[in-house]
Length: 219
Image 1 (tube, one colour):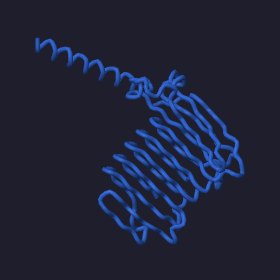
Image 2 (cartoon, one colour; image 1 turned 90 degrees about the vertical axis):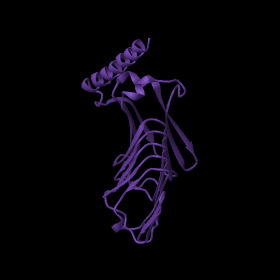
Image 3 (cartoon, one colour; image 1 turned 120 degrees about the vertical axis):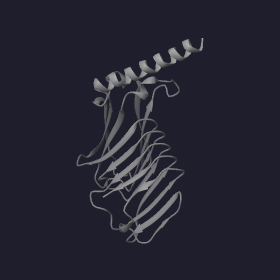
Image 4 (spheres, rainbow, N blue to C red; image 1 turned 90 degrees about the horizontal axis):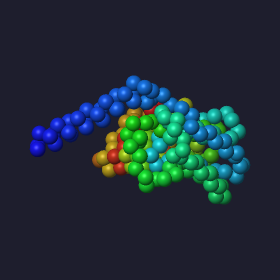
């Protein structure tokens, strides 16, 4: 009886691995545009809030006069799983990417890539806040006075076009590690789960909070 059980488990494992490698060979890493949304800007907007629980977030600058949101995945049929909500609240613009059925288990999350790319006009917002649960967050050449990033298990990467002369950095994590060049900061304080660092006057704030996710501040 034990031999039958072990044999079944081995066959199941081989089957799962076979599916995984088949998906890899048939374009699992190729992303398809599932959804596109353009959001008009109001001069009164000063804060942008991006919320995406399980979908990776990439924020990039643009010369356009509107925000563009591109939802991409490695399987086109996954379009039916998502929706993008736009909520305006005074000077805050909230973009919320969520699943239509958030509590329904979907095995595809283990095999398919899902990314939301958000293109933000230069110098439009004083503050940009990004929050995820298990997804990665990447900000590249984004210009805003203050950046606030929160995730549980996703990794965070921030890359400036020109490193700010006046930056106040605060990183806190339960077990995630930070990768950054401390030579850019004076003073700085590094403890086990918390880093405080400053360059210049520190008028621009970068706050990163994770539970297990790592943080990379790229040159």
